[in-house]
Structures are given as C-alpha cells and as structure tokens.
Image (cartoon, rainbow, N blue to C red):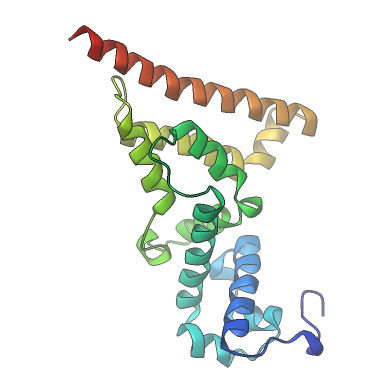
Length: 206
C-alpha cells in the first residue's frame, strides 16, 4: 500500500516509535487536516500497531500536540540561537525559510478551521515571542510591537497558505510568482525598518 513502510523498516523501541508516529502524523495532518485522519491511518503510515498511538500519546489529540511541539521546535532551532540584536526582519525571513514546506503552518491552519483551540495545539510560542522582543527593542512610533508582528506574520502566512489561489487568480507562473514574493518581502522589510526609523526620529525630537 502506498505510504506504508515495509515490515523490515518498522520502528522498534520507544523513541523510534514515537518519532515515526510524529513524522507520519505531520505528513497526514498537513495533507488532509487532523479531523480527516484516523489513528489507524497514522499508525499504518508509520508502520506500527495503532494501539501504540494511545500508549505513547494518549489520543489523537495528544499526537497532534506532539507533532506541533516538534515542528515549532524545529522552526525555532532552524532560525538559530537568540541574539540580543536580532532584527524582526531577519527573524521573519529565517522563519518562513525554515518551515519544511510550510508543514507547521498548514497543520495549524487546518486545525483552526476544524475548530481546535490554539492552546491545545501549542502551549508555547517561542518564535513569535522572539519576534515581539525584537520589535520591542526598536522604538515604534506608528505601530505597537504586537501590531507590527501581526502584520508581518499575516503577510507571510497568507502567501504561504494561499499560494495556489493567489498564483492562479493573478495569472502568475512560477517565475513571476517568485519575483512577486521577493517584492512583497522587500516591502514588508521596508515597512518594519521605516517604522523603526520613524520612531527613532520622533524620540530624538523630544
């Protein structure tokens, strides 16, 4: 059966089984959404007995939370250690460049549409917290740190999650779409930098 690991590749041992289930869950949840994926399907994809999902995670919800914790941790690790002078612009570029084809964000979007409370998906938001801290380090005259980070994330997530629709609706081929992404990225970075500069100039007049 396509997508099923052959018997010789079946994971053995607690950590191997957990890792296989998390990887399988991530693939299936991103493709179809958690509500459309059964525990048996995840287990079959991972090459293990479905009872192991309950043994290691308690339920499908427990597995979903483990998947999101793993993925958010991977994004945080991929963008590097926390720096006292890291900029919001750099964090945004690194964050969306480190998202394994958007798996984390796609599962998040599908789960929210299914009515799953965000706090049941993630208990901590390390990447967004770093963005807020970076925004707070600069003086923001026109936008609060919360508003600026929300705006930047909305642009990035919109492009990531609605890429097929946006490309088709605006009649862009792959080459043109990549150019559009770069234009919008530069515009977003300029907006964040201009906001910081405006705040600095206003503070210097006081």
